[in-house]
Amino acid sequence: MKIERRKKSGVVILDLQGKILTGDAITVIRVAINNLVKENETKVVLNFADVPYLDSTGLGEIVRSFTSIKKIDGTVKILNLTSRVKDLMTITKLITVFECFEDEEKAISSFG
Image (cartoon, rainbow, N blue to C red; front, side):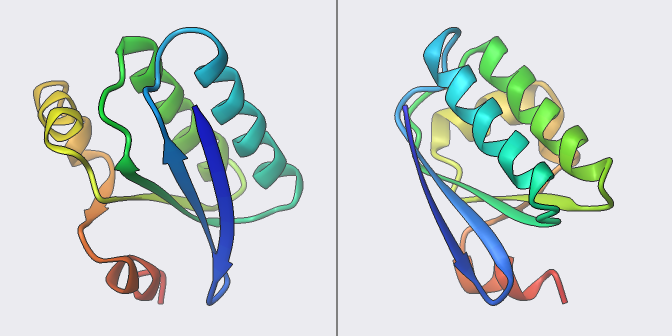
């Protein structure tokens, strides 16, 4: 699991790469989100284009990320869900919690 961080129009985009499974991947995401909280970054997009799979621990960490950013009055939005990840988020009803986008520009402009 790797994360590339970039900023566009005041929005932090985390490009997630690899499977999000119990172990190191969870730590990588947690550290990245904790850093955003410390920096008071309130507009966050998680780009799942290169995430082929996540397990229940990965789902839990995505929810924790959402909660951590929400505590500083921020928002986490999701970009480019792969079909397997989208199916999992639909089954668990998490798809209703997150605002999801297929287009990066639309995701960024949705922050207003």
